Amino acid sequence: MCPVYDVTRHERFSPRGKYKLITEIISKGPTFAPEGLGPNQNVLPVKVLETLKDCLQCGACGYICPAGVEINALVRNARASYTKGLSIPWWLWDILKSRRLTPLLAKLLGGIPGTSGLIWRLLGLTGRTSRDEKAFHFEMPSLAQSPALSRRHFRLLDPSCGFDPGPGPRIALFLGCVQNYLYPEVAEAMIRCLGGKVLVPLGQGCCGMPAWSAGAQETAKELVLQNLKAFEKARADFIVTGCAACASMIKEWPKLFSEKDPKKEVAGNLADKVREFSRLVVELKVLPFRESRDRSGTVTYHAPCHQRFDLGGVGESEGLLDRIFSDAFRPMSHKCCGQGGLFSIGNPELAWKIFEKRLSAWDRTGASTVVTTCSGCLLQWRAGTAHQTGGPRVLHLAELIDGLGENTRSGG
Image 1: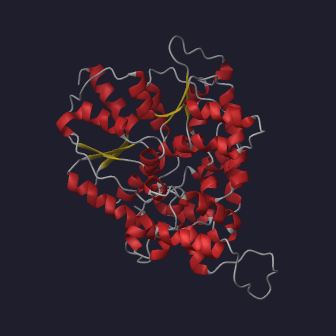
Image 2: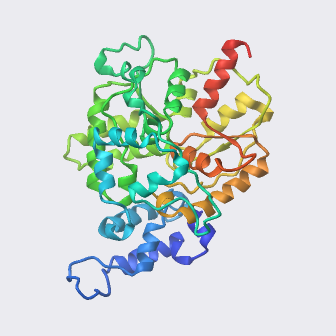
Image 3: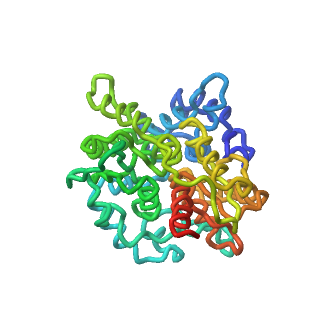
């Protein structure tokens, strides 16, 4: 089940190996201290640190474990104690927390082509090429010229502007980082699919997943508090997001607060309202058509890990595609794509090996289009196929449905 073990076959990367390392080595404390370090400083062998770092936090191991062991949580807790060994820039959290700095940085970097690799070097992060300089695997996408939340047509939907959605449920959109800064067109497609009457609260930001996965609990909590403030004002019946990982994280928000903290109840109420896009579409029955008139291509679906393991499965997404495309829908085996948020940045070669298996699975389907419902998966598939000749068209489910709706409305 573990994507990393699947490609490395090293026992320490398996769920069993990680459990043994954490419970028998880490929990007992470091067994040595290099010269110059105090007795209270946390030190672990390099291989143990590497094992902690090389975990996607996909949730597959905990989902299948018959004993109910939550390896993800054990890894996060261990990371919290040994963050210096995880090679995550400390300033990254400050950028994610800043509502002013992040849009400014995105605007400055938006004019730099993603293919140049300059952005990665400016940020001090690992490049996305392998050790073989001739083998260029992932291609970083260019940032949007302006983030979604800075665009006027998004701002006009903010509840503070007195927007009245009219009859029907009150829906608020949680964007997430990727849709805000890379793919605003996905958010626009979602809004159109839902009839255009969707609140987009200003002040929202990162869901906290990168910090949460890295074990930076306090940083994750600060990010969540920003979002609680923004979404409380929306008074929404539903919170929709186009990212399964964000939806999964929002459901984890209450865990960041103590039982006595009043914010825990607020977080719990919002967690109950969150819906991944395909689930809300099915729940509200908003699709006006039964099947596609466009038979020029075939479609397959990449199932996000967080949707498979945390959100109740991928039945809604695959059911929609089967209903819309009928025999033009080609199911694909379910496996991780290797994105994992910060994982693919710090482990480009390992991420590529995992992604290669998805490319092989796609090739076996013969489909011309790959659809997904997670921003991270969308980023990984587009970055991993951008350089390929004859590669698939990669779309978010909302983009696909929105395009079909356009064809239907125009009689195409």
